[in-house]
Image (cartoon, rainbow, N blue to C red; front, side, top):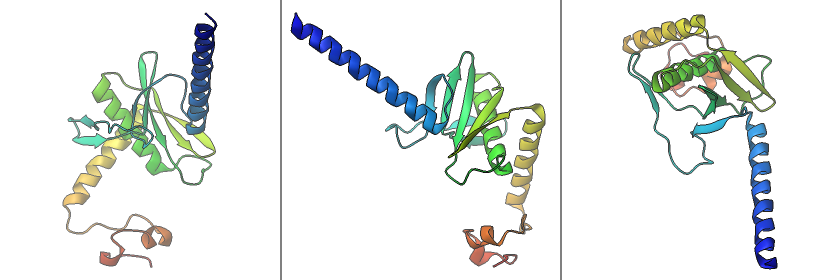
Length: 173
């Protein structure tokens, strides 16, 4: 009887340690309460299928999807320096994940999360943000088929790290 009690206590302690560890990981990554239903991080061994929105021919793999009540919330984790507000490109990336979630799960997410090392931002998925995303996607498709596309920034650092710098006639460095 003592052996069964000892095993039971051991299982209970192990369960508590796992729960504590998962709460610490959730906090470190900036995940809200809810069930993780999808992840594209190296922490999980299986490679999830990308989400796909046929209506705009868009594919993507958010870092996490969290099921909260009836909503599915996309979470994008960034390792760069924490800004005072999310970068516009990160907001558009999150908007794309919101659109993909809506297509895949049949329910529009009210918001998504962008987690930086020191802060997590909640970004409302509004009609205005969706329209900006759709306009941006349309412009990207138009640029993809153009023979010449104008540089869209004045940042020498971006140019220095660009994979197309050696071919670009408009580079800044």
